[in-house]
Length: 99
Image (cartoon, rainbow, N blue to C red; front, side):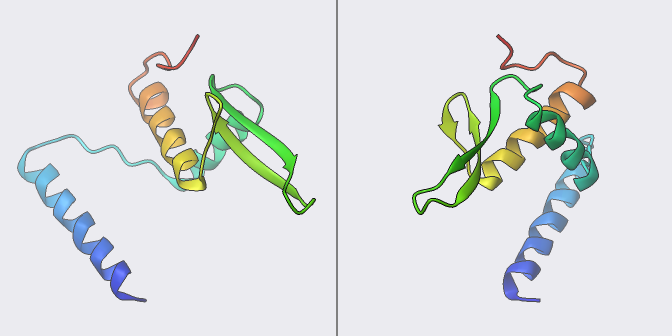
């Protein structure tokens, strides 16, 4: 364990305190749910999000995610999937990036 983990726990505790104090509804999203939605995204069922297997600069295969033509980092892809879960599955709204 390092200092970053301790700092992360402090931030989470602070957010939990604010949510409780302001009586804001909190929706938890588990990693299992993200993994399930990622498999849906790999099949191309989330508009705007594309998964490609490409050849990298060294000739080795690489897997890359794109959103509306922009290359995503792993963290950006995870954030987008979490937003998708919240917006579509929890709020029951239409995906905002649908055509």
